[in-house]
Length: 286
Ligand code: AMP
Image 1 (cartoon, rainbow, N blue to C red):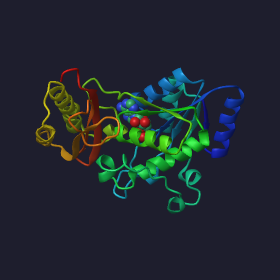
Image 2 (image 1 turned 135 degrees about the vertical axis):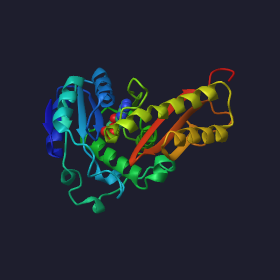
Image 3 (image 1 turned 90 degrees about the vertical axis):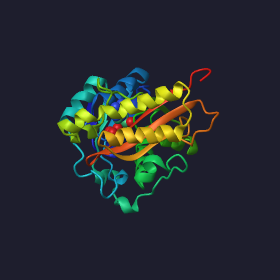
Image 4 (image 1 turned 60 degrees about the vertical axis):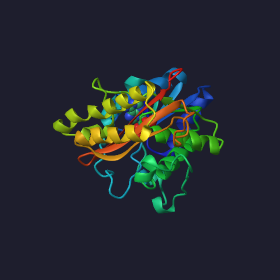
């Protein structure tokens, strides 16, 4: 695997792969890679000849009080994981390389609609930062496919909308969330948890799973289910950001006719903010 840090080197390496007739896949990340990231790279390697991963802790998507400074940076271990997963090229730029004129001067890409509410509501500017950096990466690499995790469900919806609205010729692939044996969604932020917190967090997915099971069995009083779910999570010691049932395709509020649903949660465990979701289809007759 080659590692490059400049856009010029990145474009040259991708151009060479193209000249060799290879098709290109991109997996954008912020590093501190775990098995969830590896699954995205492995999927890309199955689908294309040349897999590019990026590692960039994007300051533009962090709020002023968020964990930008302390975000885990583990480049040497990340490279090992990428090689094992089948990555050919790593792009690991500096902030100056990505935003040479500074972030204040950067053109911002705003995806409307789906970026509002949920994480967009509690993290103002977050999805503008994501859609801007992803647009830049797409322009730099011009991949045939790009792979994202369903763990960040709203992010995936924002990126699908971005690509559609701006007519980008890139196929977006969403991969299922990789979980620990106890159900916890793998996340770089799990490393912030102490042993007591780590022992408590499997309750998050358990709660989502219980709610999904109840809805599939016919429960339709979503507000009551949400109140119950929040009580359960607060009882486990978490501070709620949101717990919502939405349409799986566009994250709009659910109507009686909708059959493809997603339950999304964001909460704080101490100072660590975790998100998770479960998407499901109502069975026939439910
Ligand atoms: P991040 O480095 O957290 O920005 O994530 C980079 C990519 O990995 C995003 O597309 C995430 O949705 C995806 N990802 C993160 N955690 C998981 C997971 N547990 N399972 C699958 N994909 C994940």
